[in-house]
Length: 99
Image (cartoon, rainbow, N blue to C red; front, side, top):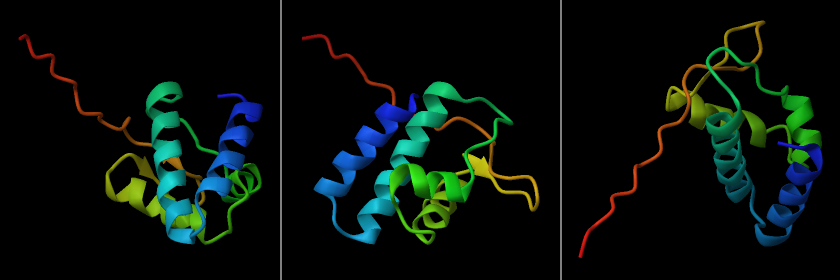
């Protein structure tokens, strides 16, 4: 994911969402999609500071988003090792109905 596309997405998010709760949910979803598409087991995510700068969110928002992903078993945050991918998120498979 290029920095410019992430920054453009963050700008749109800031304009369309206004509360910290929405930022946390949106950031969690963006990180989940990024992990699913571009990352594998053991890959390291950006630091809290880097994510705050990239998405223009507060230092409370990033750990809240990580907490949600950690609760789903998608990431792990071992002390002193950063935030790493445990498993890619599982997306619901679309069923194709035949009429």
